[in-house]
Amino acid sequence: MSKLKQYKMFIGGNWVDSETKKTFETLNPENNKPWALVPEASSKDVDDAVKAAHKAFEGEWPKLLPRERAKFLRAIGQKLRDNAELLGKVETIDTGKLFRETNKQANYIAEYYDYYAGLADKVEGTVLPIDKPNVQAVTTRIPIGVIAAIVPWNSQMFLTATKLAPALAMGNTVVIKSSELAPAVMFEFAKLIEETGIPKGVVNVITGFGDPCGKALTAHNLVEKVAFTGGPETARHIIRNSAENLSEVSLELGGKSPVAVFDDADQENAINGITAGIFGASGQSCIAGSRLYLQKGIYNEFLEKLTKRANKIKIGTPMDTDTEMGPLSNFKQLEVIEKNIKLTKEQGGTIKCGGERHPFSNEGYYFPPTIIECENHNLPTAENELFGPVLSVMNFDTEDEVIKKMNDNKYGLSSGVYTSDFSRGLR
Ligand code: NAD
Image (cartoon, rainbow, N blue to C red; front, side, top):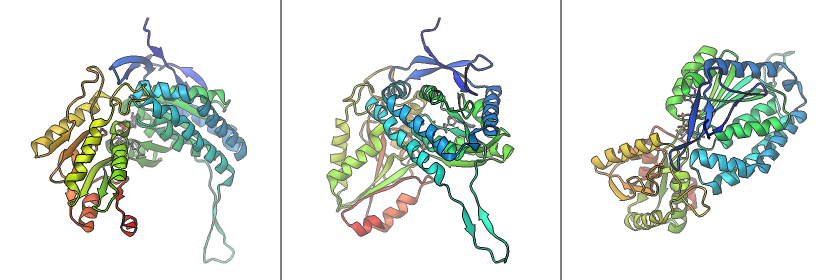
């Protein structure tokens, strides 16, 4: 008998294994050891989940008064608050993210459910101008049906909230597909959803791999919309799949976010922001500020101070409250980072700190804060999203030059400017 914690999927209000009985182990990034066993959804399981959601959509849920649906949203928010510690622990074991962050997260995420509960009965339509007498053109907003919510491993609870809360407020039903890299927290969340008494099938939670689970879900003919957060390669698959069911698709994708520091910036403030931006969550954030442009007048001085700060970051076990950086979430990511660093070094990049696996734990996926000077931003670490604690640093002379450089990347997500010149900051 396996001693691993065992999870089941939540379909149509029932807790089920995969019809194939297939399972997979989910690993603890701190030590690379399996800690839980999770059912792997097959195409048939996906079909069951979508049909359950569709049946619920044909039932009472979309017909409830918005304020009645809002009660369930508020109840979900309250459950999150009441169970913040449990959810935080499970997420930390499954992802390696710091407990001091995951522990607090559920309280913040609960506010999304509160917000959409308040919005549920305030959804407006529009009267459109039309140049025909006796004809009136109006738009009204109605629920569309089954929504597939697909989330990446990082910040799953948050990214689910941004999809689930508005979908439920409007009267849609949802199939959530959690990430195969850290599926556990979503099943804990499903237990809380069940406790609210929400009608069966309104929310379904499954997990599995891109193929067959993600593929079957995004191409299913009863899915009306796919709400996806993840990487651009997966997004391309999803767009192709949505040609099958002509569903709506919304995509929130990756980033290679630039930050500029001008000579006149408050350096201490900039160092705080940059350090949190790239080394927080071990750099595994879509908006991580991973490209740094320093104006030439402060380049050397600033880089030395920043490197000193990065070297002080305390690496350790993610459950310890004084740990500042934990492991990466998975081994594949560590290999991607190593490969990009190797190529960058070969092309002239200079490591200021980090750059090699961290010895904190030989089994875990630990990688230290890494800063690399790059002559230009076409080097691999400066160009590719690494989803890790790696900061590529370049210099610049003028404002026009740095704006061009910041925009010269295939990603666009967030960016930062440090300057004491308020007008320049706004520009
Ligand atoms: P990923 O794209 O590998 O996986 C995301 C989800 O898509 C997972 O649940 C996965 O199983 C599923 N999936 C994989 N193949 C699929 C397919 N063919 N059809 C349908 N679903 C499929 O991303 P990841 O590695 O888990 O997360 C990291 C990425 O997510 C990074 O690029 C990061 O920047 C991005 N991200 C973006 C935001 C944002 O708000 N823009 C937030 C967080 C993460």
